[in-house]
Image (cartoon, rainbow over all chains, first blue to last red):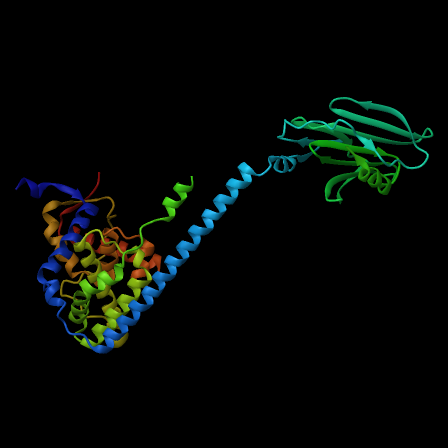
Length: 232
Length: 187
């Protein structure tokens, strides 16, 4: 017979043979109906009933868990829908400004990035506190920038600069002789730069999509006091 | 989007597979266990343990074909009965005269590369029917599409042990067939 000369892979024939062996075993065993008549003891029936009850309890529990999970997902979806579509987007956009510090050989570039291109620069900015003895020597107040320089004699100064962040804003500072610290004041995250000589304080932070910089010969306390008293 | 998530979650409730299996195949499992052990009390204990395993892994049980389901139940019941026998009698079940589980019968050929004459099919079926349950159960379950981890759960052995048993079972069948001179390596 030509069929007998055909060669097949061992694995293919094995799969066929396993199925066929099981089928042949089934053929010689009694029918399911006949086997179902095998008597069982009460103890066995009780044990199995116990198992079935336990299994049903487990099933009920899993249905309950599934329903809970479905409810939680629906609530989460609705909440995220409300947050993303209906809640005021301004609050979300305020949190979008991110800060990146690039360390170079002798200076650091601090990059402020913002996704909010629709912001408007404050119309009027007021500096409500300046240390005693300082007077305004220079003021630039344009559409997207505010810069005020206060001086007290030839060596003491206090510069306040506010710039709107349109996409990104980069400011570079010495890193060879300065140290950088992250501080928080009135809930605002700020960068505090100090020179190794101890003279000079630079305070940088972002708020309402604007970059604020205070550069002064005075102490950090004074710089913070100025920062807290800027209004717009 | 909401509907998409809901459709994912709203899978149809698992039909009560276990109760279906128990009511239709209880007799089969008892018959199989009794056939192996020759003791009704022990056979009931075996079926009870098989039911426990089925409940624990009910989601893995394939219900697509009654014939395969029946073969699957026979295999795990026989395997459980053999384990009972070993525990209670502290020795191996006597093997069929043509037992191929002897360590000497190990082929050097790789089953993945071997080709075989189709006429050897009936011989191979006979060998499988005489194969020690240690090897037959994992081999059959693998061919029925169960994964190694599922087989390990049903047989109560480790995954590596399942792999070893499948490999050895195949090699032993191949070894016996190649001794009869009908098997060749792929060119």
